[in-house]
Length: 189
Image (cartoon, rainbow, N blue to C red; front, side, top):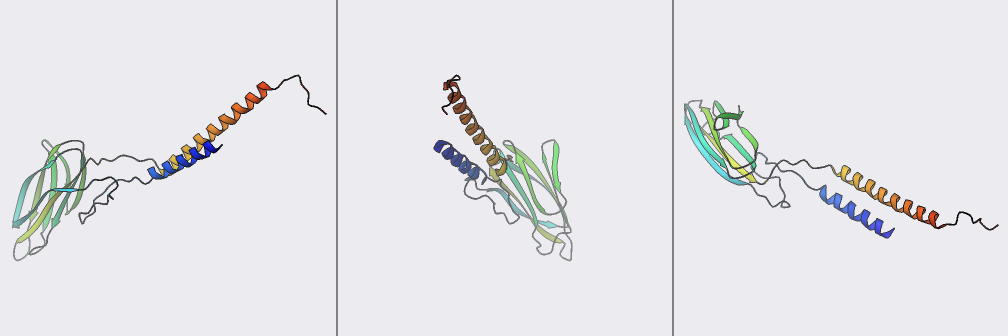
């Protein structure tokens, strides 16, 4: 019985430890929500600001060195005035993958080393007819979206297994005691 209690405590502790796993994300200010538990830190692979006079279209080659998460951030820096429009599209060689109609952050999961092509379209406005934007590529290697089982499921499955083991042990003990008893002997009165 002591062994079963020790196993139950061990299984419970393991299920609680597994429930603390979580996926990562990158928020708009460029900081990672990963804690040090997984040991991954984001790396800025590309960051460039471009000045726009009237209108401009830029093609930028971006690289992801291995499997992981790629975060692309496009920001209107509002200097000297905000841009009239700022659009973005992303492709790998022959096909368009995604686009942004406004400044913001885009997250992609890549399965291996990948070359991406970013097209940025900007139109200035105001009396200066100028504007400034920034494109940043941040890479978090080795991270991939992996579904994690809910902690309740782990706990429930471990408790069911423990109860089945306990029931099987009691059943075996009962059948052994019945097999060793003499069926012809009568209890003393």
